[in-house]
Image (cartoon, rainbow, N blue to C red; front, top):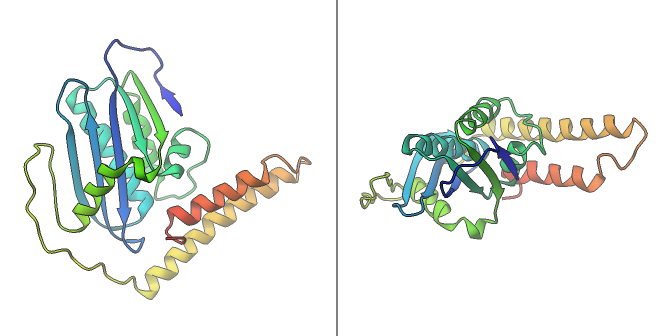
Amino acid sequence: MFFYNLPMTDAAPWTIYTDGASRANPGPAAFAYVIERPGQGVVEENGCLGETTNNIAEYTALVRALEHAQRLGGRRLVINSDSELMVKQLNGEYRVKHAGLQPLFQQAKALARHFDNVVFRHIRREDNKRADQLCNQALDGVARGSGGAEPDRARPSRPKKPSVATRAAKAEAVRDQAVECLRSAAAAWARGNPNQPPPDAVWEQLWDILLQEGVLA
């Protein structure tokens, strides 16, 4: 877990759950977040993003949650996400190697500095049920705004099958990330310590790349 701006205030922290999803990855995507404020109402938001990747959807959900929390006057935040890759990147454990994620990563970091304290935590998907539900509702044509009114229900749309060109581009992007991960590990091992980084840590990073890019979905 990473802490931004360590000086504390007396205000109780707000708990935020974020989620982003892309069907076919890349494909139709959506974001969602839930802001729980002690002694105040719960804020829920979701929406569609067009066609993009899981990782961009996850970061978009985080950025929009941070923006909303700032508008509401939040000071201390505990942000929960089931995207292990995103949380580890924000906590400095992994580098952000994908060029498309860099602007959102930098935006999230800049927004976090506006708060007195921000903690990023990785949680299991089953502990992120409400945000996950809202995300899927958006993909199925159900939108919910912060006002809490019941959304209009629409007929779910069938995700489009990705084209050959889209699949090829995705495969190339996954390959580039995996090769860069292995290249970095090889360079470190060449310095003489075969356990730095630990092989199991390299495998976990490769696994995260495959999982977050939808290869293992």
